[in-house]
Amino acid sequence: MSGRGWVLLPDLPKVFDEVVNVATAPVRLVAESGVGQRAVGIANGVFGENADARGGTLPAAMTVRVEGRPVEVTGDAIAAEFPRASGRVVVFVHGLVETERSWFHQPAPEKSRTGTDFGSRLAVDLPSTPVYLRYNTGRRVSDNGNELVGLLSDLVDAWPVPVTDLVLVGHSMGGLVVRSAVLQAHEQGRAWLSRVIKVVCLGTPHTGAHLERVAAWAGSVLDRFIITAPLARLLALRSDGIKDLALGHVHRSQPTGSAPKTAPTPPPGVRQCFVFVTLARSQTSLSARLIGDLLVTPASAGDRTQTADHRWLGGLHHFDLLNHDTVYDSVLDWLRS
Image 1 (cartoon, rainbow, N blue to C red):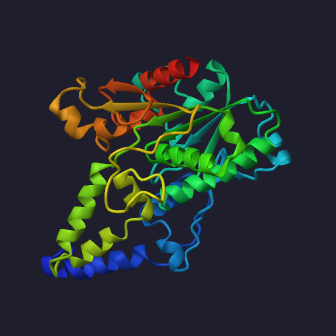
Image 2: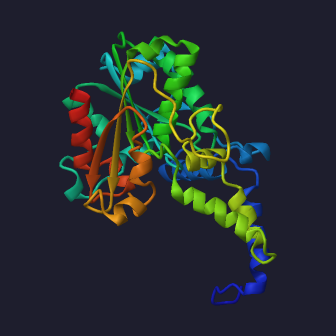
Image 3: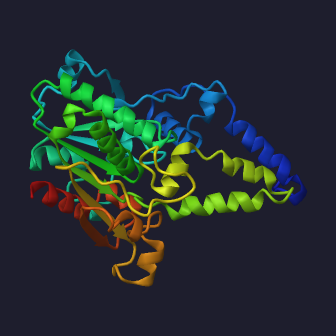
C-alpha cells in the first residue's frame, strides 16, 4: 500500500489474507456500550459461531434486554424490570447483524409522528407490554428458533401476571426465527403456543434474500483465480445464519442448497401478517419486483404460498420497516382486527 492508500493489484492476496486473519482471530467481549453492542451484533451476524470455533467469546445466548442490559428470566428479575406488566405481551425479534437497539433507531421527523419505537407505541395504543430480545444472528435460524421456544416458555412462566396474548414481531431474519420457533413449539407441544394470537413478519425473506445468493455466487467465481482467492475465502466466512437467510430456511428438515418452493404450514390457530415494502410506489412495476426494498423482493417478503394477511407499502426501504408511521399504522390495524 502506498502513501496515498492505494493497493497495488499484486498486493491484493496479501491484503485479503490479513483481513481474513483478523476476521477469524479470537474475539474478546466488547464493552456494553452502544457502539460495542453494535459491533458485537455485526460480528455475530457475519461470522456466527466461527469465532467460537477459534476460541472467541462473543455472546451466543438469546436474552431479554432492557435498556441494553440482559435480564435474567426469573420471576423476581422479570417483575422488577416489568412493574406494569400486562397480560398481552409483544415480543420483538431483530434481524441480521442487528441488536434490540435497532428498534429504537431515531427516524427522520417526516417518517414518525412521535419519534418513539413501535413497542412503546403499542404499549399505549393496543395496549400491551413490549419485550425486546437479543440473539446471535450468525447461528442457524432453526437453532435460534429452538432457543426462542425455550426462552418464551420461561418468560411465560416468569411473567408477573397470566399471559393471555403473545404476539411475536420479527424484522427480516427475525421473522424467520419467529416462524421457526412457532413450528418447533408445535412439534414439542409447548403450552405457550396456545397463547399466540398473531405473528408479524416485517420484510422477512420467506423464500430467500437475493443479495446473499449473489455473494455465494461471487465467492465461487472469485475462488477460481489466484489473485482473488483470498477474497473468496473471506466471503466463505459467511455465517450459517446468513446462509439460511439466502434460502429462507426455518427448519433443519429443509434441504440445504435450495430455497423452499412452499413454506412449512403454521400450526392451527396461529395467524400471520407479512408486511413488505418496495422503494417503488407501484407494486407491479419492474423495479419493485427486482429491487424490492433494497434487500428483499416482494415475491419473497410477501410469499403468497403461505396463509397470511399480506400488506404492501410503497416508497419505503428495508429499514423503514423498523420505525415508519405507515408501517406502524398497518401493524396496529392488523393487531386490532
